[in-house]
Each structure stands twice: as C-alpha cells, then as structure tokens.
Image (cartoon, rainbow, N blue to C red; front, side, top):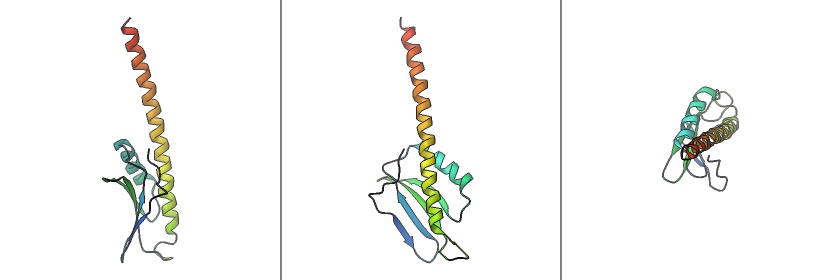
Length: 118
C-alpha cells in the first residue's frame, strides 16, 4: 500500500497542452492496488483531469493529466490533484481491508489444517 512519497519531487511536464503531473509513491504498488486504482479512477473521477497509475522500475507513479489552466478550461487544477491524493488514500484503505480479510482466511485454513494433522 504505497502512499505519496513526500520526500521525492513531483514530475511536471508543461508543454503546450496538456499538463502532466506525476506523483511519486513510496515503493511499488501490488497488481491488486493498481487494478483498484484504475477501477476507481474510471468510476469516481468527474473532474477535469485524467488519472492513471503506472508501476515503473523505480516506483509506482500516479499520473494526473490536466488541460492548461484557465477559468474556461481548468478553473482549479489543485482540486484534481487533491482528488488524486484522496483516491490514493481510498485505494490504500481498500487494499488494507483486502489484506486483513485474506489474513483471516489464511488463519482459518491453517487452523483447519492443524486440526487435520491430529
């Protein structure tokens, strides 16, 4: 469950259009985390930015693609970045619940197996 790595620098590509902000996460996300992020980004992202997560050699990055700033095009780019941050936290919470449920199931399986060995 990677969180935003606040010790690393954000990457910003600001050419003509669009502007891309790459938010560094601390470490690598699991495939399950990436799937959850992609699903929630599709269903919950109603703002002006496009969200995606990519796992690269060094870490996982959350990429926010925004139109150039301006009242008619993108009145509040910070709200898209806040939404990305909130989505990261939500996916981390879902991943933690999933891991907890998996740990409970694993404990039940191991308990059953221990009883079988008596």
